[in-house]
Image 1 (cartoon, rainbow, N blue to C red):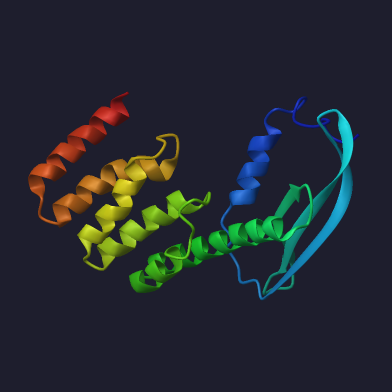
Image 2: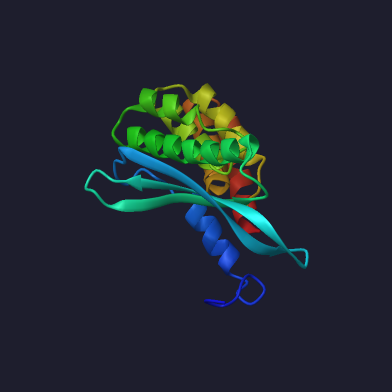
Length: 193
């Protein structure tokens, strides 16, 4: 056995893998993506069983290879592949959306961010970007929908924390100053805990 021998002996490894699997993909153009799969033997409930391992690798515009994602499942069935590919698509759309937002193209940002699934792991960042893109387009009521959806989610995530301030900001932009003040007071209370 290599390394530390798995999650029981290295409890932080799961967190590192989760960060790797959810990192943004927009840092460089990737004109070619290769998909591959294999089967390995792994322990599962004290038994050794065959497990499917799928991987997506890209060739970047400058010729380097980069692993985009890896996943392990019971088999290489359609549901497993579809879930894996949708997660890659969400990450790519998130990167496209934030690139458009940073370059001053809120319409392009909205188009890309709308394609990110609301139930996927990228949804919180996508909702946050959607709200800010809507504000750039002078559509504060549309931004409020995204920020309110985020405000009801777990406060452990950075986009949710930012939405605590973004929601009253959008209220002020919509001209609801009293509601904005209450929102800011609620945010202060939330951050004080």
